[in-house]
Image 1 (cartoon, rainbow, N blue to C red):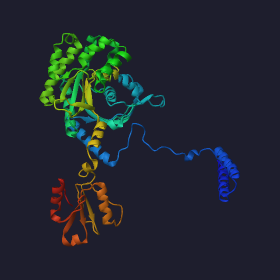
Image 2 (cartoon, rainbow, N blue to C red):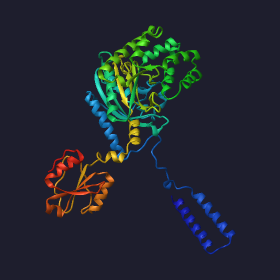
Image 3 (cartoon, rainbow, N blue to C red):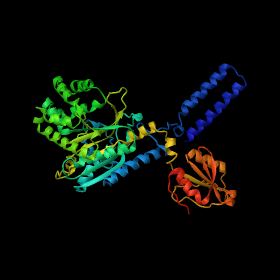
Image 4 (cartoon, one colour):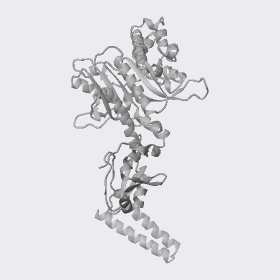
Length: 499
């Protein structure tokens, strides 16, 4: 430190000498010589690490949320949680990181996206990739055979983010799962019902829920000639059909994964089909597919599922889609994915899917992977893609307008001289000044999106009235004290009480 201080003093003195020579208009040769000495001293000094600048930014694939954005998120979470509770779910939580071996081998090709942590006292840890595998570990550890649970928490994926489309490295998942032995397809139908209820309540646009069954996919691969060892990797390729063309998927299966071209063509004949229960019945008559035991079980269960979906009144939102594969390894039965639909450009055109906003399926073998005795607990669940929903809401709504009637306050009470009463059923704030100016308070209300202001001054006290001011229009009316509650209820639709 002493050496650095001495060098800094020499740099300072040399700098003053150079400036002095320039002021005296000394010869260019002398100035150049002294400048060279100054640069040499600065080079010896080097950078001051304590004063180095750093870039202020969030890590790639993450973001901050403003109070207004958080208000939108809270509303979305509230809709989701109320639906989960309405269907009888209890909430649990698990650690944000798990033992690495807990997560290994559960996600197929997506395992490369797991965030690994450094060795912590002999434990190899990884950040959780989703909420499903930790839930299965929770069931096995606690020897639970039956539970209906929801879990809302952050998960982490070492992915290439596309934040404008709601794709992050750190993001929330909202999961609902049913664990236990029940009659076939009833829990699966309830999960689809919940998915439709939430997406309808959020009013983010028309949507379609694609359904398929991993047993149908495996049976289809088998009759098409896919080697058993390639089932999962070919499944991962098929799952990309919602994003790229069949030709691109075929090229990947043949060129990158070594599948025979004629086998890929046979797969293409199946996976480009989609429809309703009529397609299920058609495939039940397929001479090859109906002879495969796995595929036959899956088709029969899907037919039963459609019966329940019709009873629930949501069958018009469901499409049997043979291209839906869901790349995660742990799915064993019915799988589903909800996509938002883009309005057709021309009359008669089919609506296009513009992005997944929810997904899930049945995973009957996952708990058994953790149980010492291999005890199996049938499970089915769903996950709401809230980050994409947040992005859609932010794009489609003017947040300021949407929050003006639902932010932190509906009405604020201002006063001059005397604090008379408060609105008990509303949230309220206090300005931290002894004598705040009225103009400053009104300006704060405008910035905070508060729609109404009740003003009580000396004159209002004498006249027995309260001045009610609209923040947006700046119109003011005098309201009798006894009529204030009803007037505010009329304007905001909010029940109030005064004390």
